[in-house]
Amino acid sequence: MAWGRPLSLTQVKEIAYSHDATVNDVLMAALSGGLRHYLRDRGAAVHEIQAMVPFNLRPLDQPVPRDLGNKFGLVFLPLPVGVSGSYRRLSEVHKRMTEIKDGRDGAISYALLSATGLTPEPVERRIVDLLTGKGTAIVTNVPGPAEPVYLAGTPVRTVLFWAPTSGHIGMSVSVFSYRGEVTVGLMVDAAMIPDPEHVVAQLELELDALARLAPSRSRRPPVGAR
Image (cartoon, rainbow, N blue to C red; front, side, top):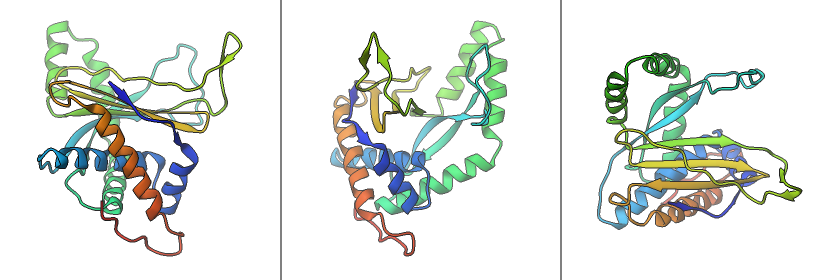
């Protein structure tokens, strides 16, 4: 497991605003760039990495139900690690995420997951293996409290978490925003990535590159070299 330094949520929002993208687009593009450079530094050429991304199906203005519980589907987002240039990767991620939002994959996968939970365990295991066999990583982005929270009167400085994986998934990338900062936690199969801290470091460098590219909204940004 590895985790990065707290990043400014304001800076990430500014990058997103400058490029007509979302905060999630920026973070997924930074992850794509981080994985690209990590793999290239080790002589590996990969075109895409299939990420399973939880897709929220509950309207943001809808109150949390009394019985709690999540309401999300899983969608596949091909991370464009084979695309050169920070801006090109961000554009490609934004395009792919827009297609996912406009489609029905999230609702269909939610229904499938709900039905799977009612099947006998051997059937459930086979379905999980089938789904996870199509992906390499699970990536989740959770917005936390904007204001500090306290534990026994002591302010919580930062929050880290690592999303669990199932089946054949060998990588979990967890993004959490809290108190105006964003932290990234990475959990991997050590046989696949023995030095996950280098992936996190490359992700941070990619965010810095996107920040340098951020233009005024009145002109098209240049194409980055990373």
